[in-house]
Length: 434
Image (cartoon, rainbow, N blue to C red):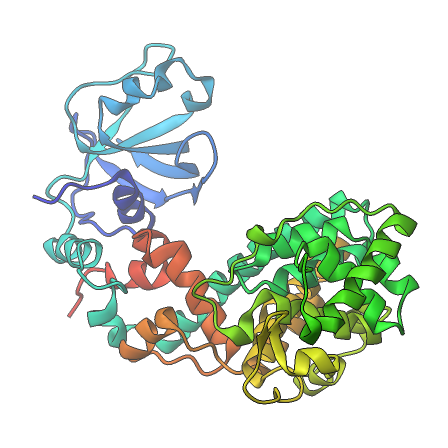
């Protein structure tokens, strides 16, 4: 027999996946379930405000679920007043009688032998599947509307997680949205590999200094590369550009009393494609910030479509960075103008949308969630090893709404085997009624 987890029994109770004919408690009292109660995910009994009829008498109260009846005492419920109103104890194994704090016996329903075999088999097949997407073999049987509903739920949870990071920055910046949008831009430009040093850099270089020097790209580059700790100490003749930056930075550092908090060693270049070198990304940031002095208002009010986003992020790096990946790494040929389509889509997904979502939460404006959803449906889907898992299972992402939802679904549910909390998993556990 498979070893159940308590959450399996909670799901069996929630969806009433058991035989209710001739139902009675372990002490032989006839039992009829009128209301299962609402699932409580916080402290206290598992299902609250239930209604059951015991021996012809209506009982209103809570339902507690355990694998073994003795878990009642293991969890010290007998001394917790919150459990005094439990009217039914639902267990798999009735291994002993349990009592409330006042000494009264708690009516107990044992589900052993009452759960259909196909529900148990579905549980085993799902939870012990060798596939990375546990429901892969049965996914085709799940209604499309249910898959979309779970995808939307996972997407919302993913956006909430990202927006919490934005709102944390906002609190650190004393509710300054411009500074927060600026720092979040650096973090997004790190593309995971260099996200943390990017954020550290932005915190060390206030946005007001960038705005003060807007229109002078060389000064902005000097401050960014200097604070990043990436200006070489010695330069040959080919690197006269670097010498000029070093001189500018020396002046600006004293003028603005900047503290250099990063070391060049903090940046990751190994196993990173040259086109994604942090040095090139910093040059791109400098060019973008030079032409966008009011970053937050532009992102918040200056775009509604993917095309408008691309126009804001349409910039050209300085001549040196059109031919170099790093100070000592020239390109074989001149770089293409601007950011690639794929990078722009990633910035739309990881920079703009979380910023919008966080703003909507901060201002308590629900329409911003819908705005995020609409925008993501305009952006191309991500193609990576995780979205490929869904693709090979016959569930291809059609846009960024889908791919972001799938990433949230995989990280939040599939990889953690939390199928019992997923609408798709819950649907696949249902009894076969044919």
